[in-house]
Image 1 (cartoon, rainbow, N blue to C red):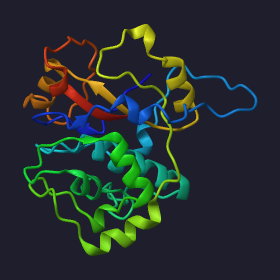
Image 2 (cartoon, helix red, strand yellow; image 1 turned 30 degrees about the vertical axis):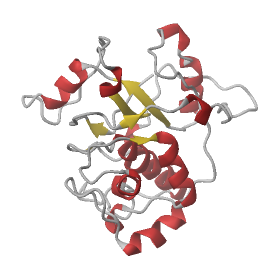
Image 3 (cartoon, rainbow, N blue to C red; image 1 turned 180 degrees about the horizontal axis):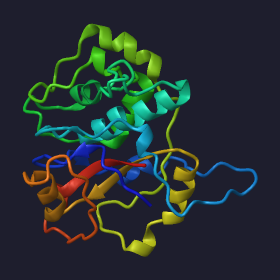
Length: 238
C-alpha cells in the first residue's frame, strides 16, 4: 500500500475536520469490481497519473487539495485521456483542478485557517463540481474569491455519487483493524482513495525541513500526539 501525499504538509493544522458518526453511517461500503477475481499486485502506484504535489501553505485546505487537485484531476484526465503536462513538463492549467474552488466555498472564516469536512467537499463536488485551475487559481492568502466563470466550468465536472471504504471515528485504530486488503482491491481497480489520517510531529517536521526541499520522504514511524485534533490531515491514497 502506497500513500502518496498530494500536498506538501506546510500547515498550522492539517485542515481536516473529522466526520460525525451519524453523518457517514448511511453511506454504502465501496466494493471492488465484480466478475472474475483478479490478481492483486504486491505494490500499486497510480502517482504517475497524478499532478505533482502542490503546496497548501498555511491554509486549512488539505481536503480540497487531495480531492480537487489530486483525485479530480486524475479522474477527469484518466476518463478523457488528457495529458496533465505540456511538452515542456509544465502543468496544463486546463487539465488540473482547483482546490480553491472547493475550499473557498466551504471555509467559514476569512483567515483561511479553518478545516473542512470531507463530506461537505464531496457533496459540493456532486452538486457543483470543481473548476479547472485556470478558472479558479489557488492564492495562498485568499480563501473567499470565486471567479464567476468558475461556476459554469465546474458544473461540467460533477460526480454522480461517492461511497465510503472505511471509517473509524475520533480514535486511533490498531493496524489490524484497518482493511488493507480492501484498500488494495480498490487501488487495483485504478480508483484512488480520499483518506483522512492522523499525522504527528515527525510528519510535520519532514514538511518544514528546509534541507530537504523537493525531496520525497517515506513516513514510516508514527507517534501518537497528545491532541489528535491538531494533526488530522487529508491525503489521496494512490
